[in-house]
Amino acid sequence: MANSFRTIAEPGYAQTRALGSRFFGTAAPAGSADELLLRLDDEKRQRHDATHWCFAARFGVAKELTERSSDAGEPHGTAGLPILREIKKRDLTDCLVIVTRYFGSTKLGTGNLARAYGECAALALEAASVAVRLITRSLRIECDYADQAIVYHVARRFQAALEAVPSSRRAEFIFRLAPDLVAAVAAALRDDGGGRILVQEIAS
Image (tube, rainbow, N blue to C red; front, side, top):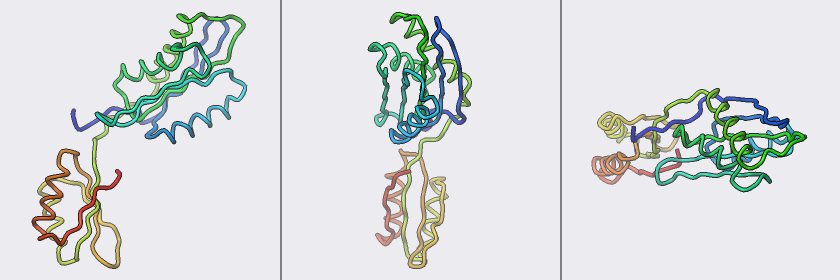
């Protein structure tokens, strides 16, 4: 669906081995680069004696989609990209996969290394719980209490989720709705309210 995306709801974990090296995979939800860094730091603390902490992540949707990956010292293209391919194969976003390696006594070679990282990432993703989320935008609405009926009417008309925000001065609301309805809802509020209703898009 154009107004939804697939993401990880509950983390998944996996462990694999390849010629003496051990790989630990974690697939988890992450909505930003900051969250990625926090989870990566946590993984490094928990597995401080590992040799590599490789990852891939995707954030956002459509034109705002961002992808990141890191080989973390492994040969170029042998870790981050294989992990990212597994995420893309499942059409997931707002998620990350970290694969931590404990080097064994035998070098794997670039081909085997890429397969090992990809396999561990795939198993972690298969163990994770995936959910479909709606893509929404948020509007902050402020009006006189006398104009509240207009706000409720527009919310019903466009089937927007409406949340009242406690305020002592004026009535305040948060509208959550599909991105393609933002312009129409904002126009309806301004027109029906005679310009008295303040409409501002905010981060969801």
